[in-house]
Image (tube, one colour):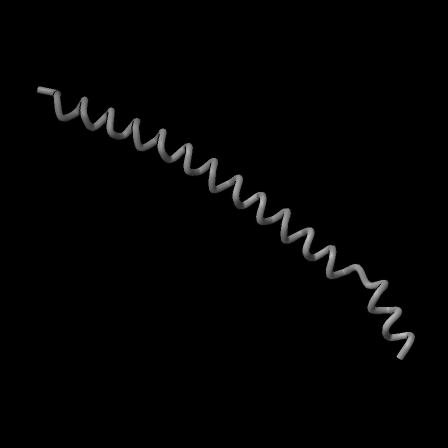
Length: 57
């Protein structure tokens, strides 16, 4: 029983998995923020082009 408890205390694989999970979450948040900013600029450009097409003779 002592050996099992010692192995459990020394096992750091769970901590590593949590660290990788946090890194993945941070990358995902950055990607979402970047995609949102780019999406707004693309939308504005399409609105501008649409306005010019509507005003064409």
